[in-house]
Each structure stands twice: as C-alpha cells, then as structure tokens.
Amino acid sequence: MVTQRGRRDGADSPGRPPRRPRRPDTPDADNAPTAEMPAVPAEGNGRNGDAPEAVRAKQIPEAAVARLAVYLRVLSAMSEQGATTVSSEELSQAAGVNSAKLRKDLSYLGSYGTRGVGYEVSVLVSQIERILGLTRQHKVAVVGIGNLGHALANYGGFPGRGFPVEALFDLDADLIGVPVGGLPVSHMDDIPRVCAERGISIGVIATPPTAAQSVCDRLVAGGVQCILNFAPVVLQVPAHIEVRKVDLAVELQILSFHVARRADDAAGNQGTSGLPTGGSPAENGKGSGRNGSGPDGGREMVVRS
Image 1 (cartoon, rainbow, N blue to C red):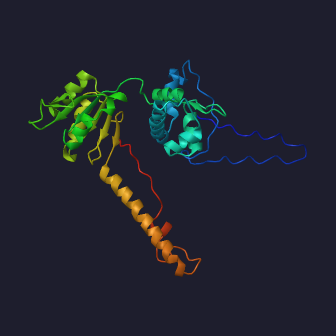
Image 2: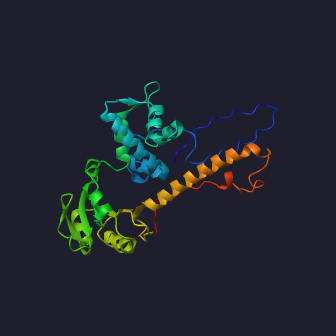
C-alpha cells in the first residue's frame, strides 16, 4: 500500500483538553499531491512472495499506467537526442502533465530523483520498461486486413518497441496466402492454432463489428491474453482477458463536444456585456452547469465483461 507520511502532532500540554483528531484529507486519487513513499528495494521479494516489480505494478492506478507510457515515449526521444538527466518540470512540460502528478507517478517506481540534478534518463527508461512489461517481446496478431489492418501490418514502429507482428488473418479468399508486411495472411479459422503455435499474446481486431465477437472468441481460444479492439462493439471476454477499445468515431465526437463548448463559451462571453450581473446560468435560461454544458465526464477505455 502507498503510505503518506504526515506531520506528527505534539503531545497534549498539561491542563489542556485533549486535541480532537484531525479529519484525514481524502483528495482525488488521481490528482492527489505528491506523497513521500518508501522506495521499494531492488532485490528481495515483496508480499506474498511477489517480485518487487510485481508489487509495484499492483499499486499503480490505471490512469498512472497510461501516463507512464507517455513518459517512456518522451524519455526515449530525449535519450536519442543525447540527454542524460531531466528535471520533473522539463519532463512534465514535454508530457503535458503537471509536475506534482508526474512526481507522484514516478514515486510508484521507487524513483525520486536528485535535488538540483533531476532524474537520470536511462534509469527512468529502464524502470518504466520493467513496470510496463517491456523487457520481453509481446507477439501480435492482426485480424482483418482491410485498410486499417494493412496499415497496422506495415507499420515498422511496432517491432522496435517490443511488439512484433507475427500473424495476420482475414476471410477474403483473395488475401489468403498473400504476404502483407512480409507475412502471409492466414484464414480466420486458423486463429486458435496459429496463435497457440506462435505464442501470440496480443490480438488486434480490425474487422467489421459483426465479426468482432467471433474473432475475439477465437483469439481467446488460441491463448491470447490481451486484445486491442478497433471494432465499434463491446466484446464479451473472460475475466482474465484485458481489452482496450479504440473507437475513432467516439473520439471525434468527444472532440466535437469540446469545439462546440468553446464556441458556446465564446458566444456567452460576448452576450454577457448587455446582461445584468449576478444572474445564475439557470436564470439566464442556459440550464445547469457551465454555459448549460453540464458537468464534464471522463471516459473508460478498458472494456471487460
């Protein structure tokens, strides 16, 4: 568990009534200020016999995992440019995260940096790679060799990041046996056998929505542990299977919402010059919430059954 060290209250003075216990603060877990954590030792086992990396990984929130992947991309680019150290302010600006949140994220790794020096880039890269499980390769299968599938199969950035594409599948008879990105396309009926034989751990679904669940079932039967789903459908999977859903239409709709809200804000600001002050949004006929937009909402990207 992550523990936060607080200031110890002094003993009660004689004659004074006992102090009332302070109410603990309960900030949002994702936005809480940086807390001092004891570093996890580099050697030895954690609780229940787990390795230290496994203990750390269990403590990291889902939102922090996504940010760690961003930090790794930024740090890798800095390393390629010859940087050896980086301050929390520099890294937070490059990653688009406030520095307090970044320091808290890095504290999950047991890494605190050196005052006046910052963090060693190479050390941070290796720590994040271990936590994200990138010290070994994860073989990938792409199912659905349409326009998106072709692009994914031909993308040269996956192998260098530890995700070699090892299998391709489709139903189109004209594609079966044809090499795409250097790999011949196999039939979807062969998904369980080929994935088991080649040790595929990640499956990418780039099929129409009607075929996505059937493809998912075959990937699971072939031993695939994680699925990246581009089909606009919610997959039903066993509890031990991790699914990430990427719906480009939904992302565009979310961007559309922000564009529309900013336009409403601009129009509202221009119209307030002739309005009496002190009126609430509801009194001005704009409904509840800021400019009638209502409260902001988050979105969950991990889909499970």
